[in-house]
Image (cartoon, rainbow, N blue to C red):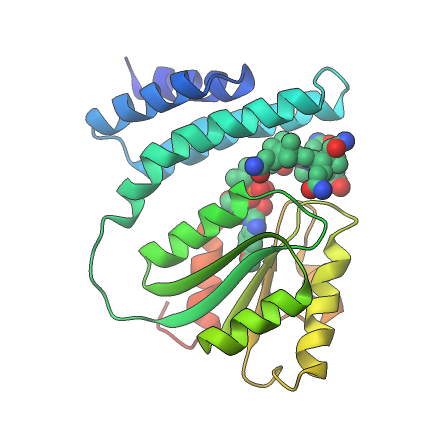
Length: 217
Ligand code: B1M
């Protein structure tokens, strides 16, 4: 199978919601020596974007989103370990990462965490639907100097603003940089709420995190 066919089949497995198919294709891709990140971006994420379009146009419903998400996660479970590669490296910085309160979208946040880990950051992933108090508790506990908040809904983006405010109120704002991301989030939103940076995807999140901790890009 050519790489284009494989990417297309990976995308289709997500679109029709076939976790076993996504897992098997992901294994095939690795066996063929394909770059796991390209498989994620051009296969799984392309499929997930299509699911989102079909949902927005009313052709797909909530169960289709759920099963599409399950298929994406099954493929990622195979591809993500190949991204990290298990290399020992110096720790560039400690990051607390989570999806904000009221928001259950985990896939993009987890991918950002995987890429940060793969690139030398120590990541405390606190999960989804996390209140600002939980971000703050994790920052205190881990001594993180970077906090990342993911939001996929226009309604939950407001929690990113609340997080910046709460860090200020807790007296932590000077020691912690804040990065934000998620499909509806933009650079201008990040500027408006006083975040230190915005990243569009997991690759740019790594570059941003490096910049924010003062590591060479
Ligand atoms: Co939801 N959903 N969803 N959903 N869902 C969206 C986000 C939506 C755009 C679909 C649509 O209408 N086209 C829409 C939001 C509309 C809006 O507010 N603008 C939507 C909706 C409406 C909803 C519900 C309200 C539906 C309902 O109940 N009626 C509901 C809300 C539940 C809740 O959170 N309270 C809901 C539920 C769900 C599921 C739980 C079923 C499921 C998630 C499953 C899971 O995560 N385990 C789901 C899914 C799968 C989606 C879509 C289809 C795909 C999201 C995804 O995983 N993408 C999504 C449509 C879309 O985005 N295309 C949609 C793949 C992932 C790799 O990309 O998450 O964007 P993404 O992450 C990227 C970047 O954004 C960035 O890097 C990542 C990797 O490249 N990034 C960061 C993300 N976080 C970052 C943080 C950073 C930096 C970069 O720094 C900290």
